[in-house]
Picture (cartoon, rainbow, N blue to C red):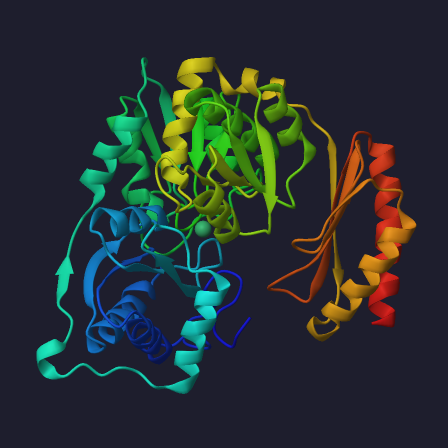
Amino acid sequence: MGKYFGTSGIREVVSEKLTPEIALNVGRALGTYLETGTVVVGMDTRTSSELLKNAVVSGLLSAGIGVIDIGLAPTPLTGFAIKLYGADAGVMVTASHNPPQYNGIKVWQANGMAYTPEMENELEEILESGNFRRAPWNEIGRLKKADPRGEYIKQALRIVQLDDSYNVVIDAGNGAGSILSPYLQRELGNIVISLNSHPTGFFVRELEPNARSLSALAKTVRAMKADVGIAHDGDADRIGVVDDTGNFVEYEVMLSLIAGYMLRKFGRGKIVTTVDAGFALDDYVRSLGGGVIRTRVGDVAVADELAKHGGVFGGEPSGTWIMPQWNLTPDGIFAGALVLEMIDELGPLSELAKEVPRYVTLRAKIPCPNEKKAKAMEIIAREALQSFDYERLIDIDGVRIENDDWWILFRPSGTEPIMRITLEAHTEEKAKKLMETAEGLVRGAIKRA
Ligand code: MG
């Protein structure tokens, strides 16, 4: 990780660490990196987004790159627009689910997937060197404005269709999903009730969709006797779902259900997920004739696996879903349409959720200074292998050891000074016992690191 780019592009507090000068230079660095071509630029609803977006646009134009400015747009719409306009890259000004004082910049490839860490490193080097291309007056990039929403909805309706109409409540969290998600649901033929869909940059609820932050959505679904509630984070690359009884559907359950539905819809094949996803997905997908592949945590790793080796669906247990038949950009809005089609084909969500096996998941965060992480992980890896009677080891991202009825993942956080333990077992008793041993091991390793 460099000075600017972290695990999800650049994400900092505005006017402190993320300034218009940095945004300008990111535009210049990307323009210098690309040398020529066109870039789609979109932004979320934050109060600082217009300011930062204009700086990025200026940087790109000054390097001789053409810009298609799509203005306020959820991340998946920016990803869609890159492909629609045949652009060479995309830039999204967003801080996703972070609090309102944050903003960020994330760069996307021509095929719709995010820049890999290697590509971000190259941008970082150009940023640090300050050697930016300055186009002469007659080669300065041209700026166009565009609105790809109509085309997005038209193309989405070619893939997803409903026989019946449903009552759908959308909670866009005052984020960029406000300008697209309710409209797509309406065009599918549903009756839509919108919550928190005024895109002002002032957020009414916490942007991370979870049972706590979606309590108003759950109440509305119950009060309106709706069939489903759909929520997004600030840039709507993620989806959180409330079922027809007003219960938040756990991410792992939703991931299994949609993976299963994608197998039914598109035929047997691979489901791609990350090392922090649980066993329920494997069991459910196997029962439907599919197989599961695990990658590093993050949408780039999932998209990369899908791009290189194919697959029917990719998803993380954070509600980040990639539908490769549609795009390699994670898309919470298209995901919402698929959820409705699944309900249309298979029945009410509260009933479907009962089909997914449930295990006990425990998570712990243990403070660990950033500079101790590497050494501590070394000790943890060595000692975990001795302390647990495991059958398989996955070390593509942290260390995951597993047996037939439990697994443990040890992984340093990419953004905070903590070590994470995630584990799953078939019984509460077993899970607690595993956590006790795992915590002791991690604390000991950090002390000696
Ligand atoms: Mg997001």
